[in-house]
Length: 85
Image 1 (cartoon, helix red, strand yellow):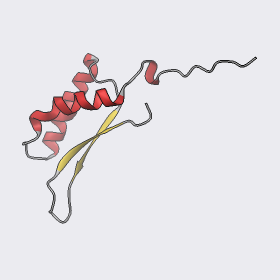
Image 2 (tube, helix red, strand yellow; image 1 turned 45 degrees about the vertical axis):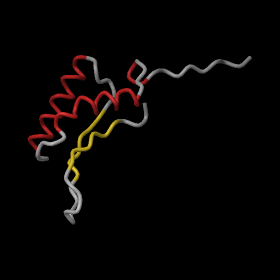
Image 3 (cartoon, one colour; image 1 turned 90 degrees about the vertical axis):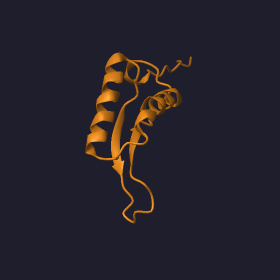
């Protein structure tokens, strides 16, 4: 007799990465023309943490400031979403 294996959802609930990514992208559109610095990173972090507190963002994330050393590309803040959900 084979046993049916049931995988438990990540953090106790289902997370749809694509939906979370779209929500976060839409939420952060207002910052697209802002100057990239640690203050902007803090604002984005605070907003995402509030959305997480409210239950709108459920996927684990981290932020990174990306800079092109050659100066050919503009600086940006990358939201890195957990890929193992």
